[in-house]
Image (tube, rainbow, N blue to C red; front, side, top):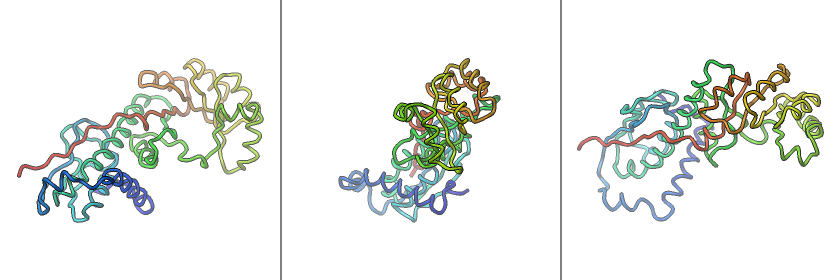
Amino acid sequence: MSAGMFTGAGAFTVEEIVRRAYAEDFASGGDITTEAVVPGDSAITGRIVARQPGVVAGVAAAVCAFRLLDAQIELSIERDDGERVAPGETIMHLSGKARAILSAERTALNLLGHLSGVATTTAELVEAIGDYRARLTCTRKTTPGLRVLEKHAVRLGGGSNHRFGLGDAVLIKDNHIAIAGGIRTALERATAAAGHMRKIEVEVDTLDQLEEALAAGPPDAVLLDNMPPATLARAVELVAGRGTTEASGGITRESIREVAASGVDYISVGWITHSAPALDIGLDLDAR
């Protein structure tokens, strides 16, 4: 199996992230515990094991973590990015110098556990709304430095990605509207600046704001912020297919089906990246 889905420039991004993690771990003098306790010529074998069921994500980052410390570590991947894993199942086998494996262990497991947690949480929410038209999407509420990997994990879980960065599309939010002096003015300025190649989305809190936005554009998409399901359903009726509808704000595991039932096109959830519980994954060494 392949070591995740990152090649070319993507692989350099993964390596940069792992190097930053090592810069934190080794900043105060290296792995003094391993160097003191483990003989330099010791070799070990083991496996990375899932303790919980979930969707695997972050294999490329884990592989990079081990290989950066010792390119000779042998890795055999059993469950790659996007595959489901059951408790006790092996994600990868590894063998090599003990010092390198132990020093890399926490960085590899941190990334693998966190990203698998993002993918697993996404998959659970996608399944919850599977009989509705709405698609689950993430936001820019990502862990600083991990956006590429977290958004990749969302896709592995069956979700979709919102903007990667501020230059991808125009998203006019409440503070933009307040400073511009109103929705119409904000939309007019955005339309003039964006040109025909960039989409424009505007955030609205009420149906009155929605009607104002539709009369002024309509924009390519409307972000329906913190609206109850009944109001969302009415908003979808008002838009009437003239743009994409996105529900956002305060959406939980318990409420997401009711939100989806309103007929919106997308449901954006920030906590699937910044607060998804990590999947419990560990390194088990073989008996010596």
